[in-house]
Image (cartoon, rainbow, N blue to C red; front, side):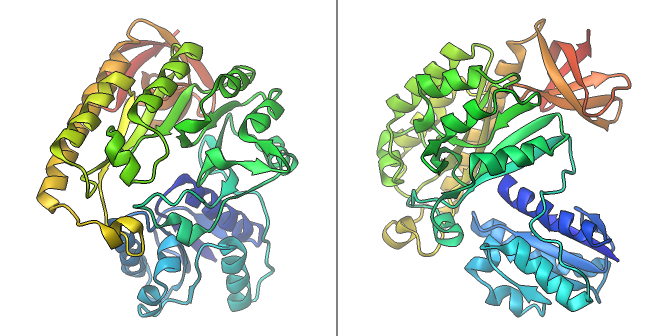
Length: 406
């Protein structure tokens, strides 16, 4: 039997899909993470924006083009938010976010008369292993539905996380969660967890962080790791203090920039990447200008920009008037252009310098992979996926840099 487990959305979703794939493989199934001909489709959905929900619903039709008679199992944030919109598409099974791995595997086991192998570590499909250490969020930003769909924050124990890491053979470990900064278990914090991983030989990268975690103690802990990837994805959302307040983000523009400076103090070759929302309802032209200018001031290596999307049930949707789509889109295009300029500037600053990268896959004449500070490397020659190489950066290229192995 063949199963295709397809994922939209965040790295946490990908990790949870990996657990479903591991359970199916243990039961003897052939498993893919792509939409392709299969007997069963597991669609792991996203609801972070209205567009993500639309794409999630469209997945059902996309899967059935490969096999109209296949069983279709839907899980995740979009089906948590609106189960009826999937049930009306006559899918086999719908569940939400809580315990979705076990629920989907149990239902498939029931439908196909197979053993249920739940609770396994996620199948790793790439050279990076994503380790989920935390779920849920208690921040309730005024634009976000995720706390309502994922629930309040909860975390895994350090011992449990360590067992999974010790069983992993990937050369890079990525610690992820819905709100990684909120990690807290048995009195231990994210800083404590990092210190507990000091003897791990694999490269360790952190998922998305809130800037409030950045402190001398936290950064000092990061320096203790054997192989730390100095990329800090610090969610910003707006460069305007007034908009940040309306978003229920608990920091100012100035405080954010102070945390960026602290990162560079400890990691001079480190990178800071971020998210910025274009066209939040209260955003004026002056506010937007501050979002543009902070890209240079913070020295971002990469910017993920997207339009504000009204999500039913959030504070911003209930109390604030949405801006016209044309305004939001125009601001988005400016952010994307500015972000690309910042990315090229960052990469170019490393021309002639040497960095380590882990080869991931062949793309045309190059092998690609990422440095610790998340520059995508395009290196000519025949390399070994999963192996670390020392390279000299030559020049910016596409979404990264051309480099040669030395």
